[in-house]
Image (cartoon, rainbow over all chains, first blue to last red; front, side, top):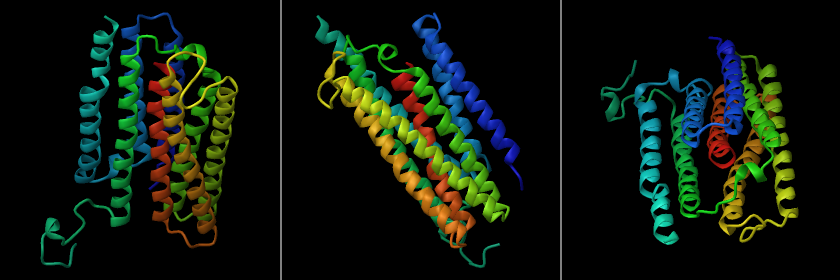
Length: 95
Length: 199
């Protein structure tokens, strides 16, 4: 069982994505388009690391579901419950 | 497979298909991930709530941050290779690769120390900074500080793993568990890099 090819390909993909994300960050793009592209790049990077480096793609579904579903649930929950509320605070204090 | 008469979910087998050590490492990682998710959610709230949040592009040196990211990703790759070598029974190769990974972590820490000292010399403190909103530097020091602490403990764990592996004490799974933690530290950096430095 030799996955070393996968590891080096993953490494190259991660470096390439990082470079592209930095370039997008300094490119003259509309803020919303930049945000979408960068967040897509981030998600792909996170997926590559957890699937290939952390071997999640070789684990049983029960473990993958436990680990991924619970983390994603909390992240989405925190985002909609806390982070996004900042906008409303700003709107109500600026006036 | 199982010698027990009970079914898997009654405790007769391995419901998750991994040893309890690996399961515990995964559960620890989930808990730790939620810690960082909370930090980033709090940071997102503060940033959205402050209309004059400093422009990160003006303050951070992307060449330094890019190099730090490059080093951390590369150390994750050498760790993955170390786990592969360890599984294949190539103990010496695995030891070398784990040492290399620890070296990468140490270089990352050195660059972060440089970044922090530059910040502190510019007048940034936990409660104040020269760029405006005081909470900007609070978030910076707390979030990168917590991540840096994880890198530091990771380097320690890797050094111990490499040493134990060279003396034949560490099992292939021991190397794998250290690897899981190290990849997690890399994974967290992906999010910090995106939300703190890029966006």
